[in-house]
Image (tube, rainbow, N blue to C red; front, side):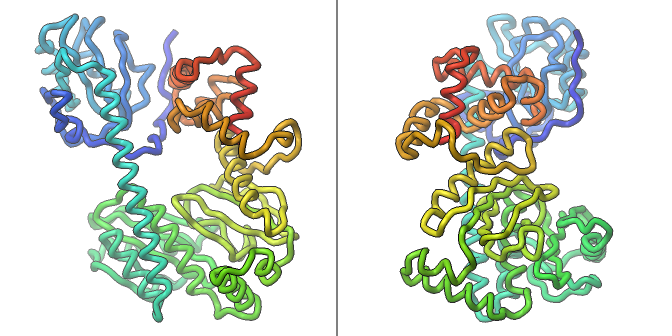
Length: 472
């Protein structure tokens, strides 16, 4: 049976690894025999199939010892057609050296070819890639955190809007501008851009005011990466960004700036805003949540967690609350009594149960779990489900047990297991929800079973894992 790759597969959440970084690892001893070293690796896959095309997702470093290599030209053509980023060839036990025909084919197709020495297991290469990804992800998170702190500091200055734009332009190494609905610049900071890029950015801003009113738009022009974000507050303002390079985390940093600028450019605060400010001041000065909550609105409260693309879903509608916080890609909102939550285009929402002020911490955890469930099941919105057997457990003890049980699993395997269990073990639906090939799902679930030492065909084992994932 022949399978095909149905369209491009989304890249994993971890940043890609430059091939040059992998080549610089002296402990691996890899050697580039053909192709450029400037490509990026998104994952590692090992295959000894004569035609690995049906099992490749694109962007991977394909590792092989050439067990069934008979036609190097056709093999390389199929690997390139599948979108693989590079090919790693292990010498011995099948070949003593990398076949010259394979080197020539990779050179013709522009596919990077690495020689993997006999003393380097394929698993060591995979482990090195994941470690480099983890390091890159840590750098990205640190960069985003530092940028958010810088933006928050700028927002507290006497002239906050120019200060936030300056901080944003500095963090993105480009230009940040605030545009009026007609496309005129309201304020700007950072490097000047080419006329073609400036005109294209104005066109992007106008796109935000067309039918459908998208929350964001992106383009490239004049050698610059461009992005425009609609601000909340009802003023029709937009944030325009231009930079020479688009780095991982830029979108998250821009989202934080959108929230701040939306608040800063909103009409001058009236009685409601002044009351909320007083409540926040009381909290900062040590007042109990129950004392400050009446100033913010009527109880019970609902916590919403959201992840998606574009500007956060903030007030005025759809969420209908100014109490919004964006942190590391997740938007958290606090809704007073009487505010219902509906699905938002382009966003995935997790909603807590309504609670009193003293239980807001627990509601925050409920919303986070509901968001994870919604993303795993590919739903636009999921609400906290109270009651049932889980309500009989002590939350702290259940969470401690869940962490202990699932400790052997890295985060990608946890999310795969969560999606697979939520979809009743259906391989195809899980693959669609995660945006990967179903064979990848099978491999990950098999890996989960091995690491946990559990038979995942056993209903009792599945039930135990599902309860553990609920409390994780």
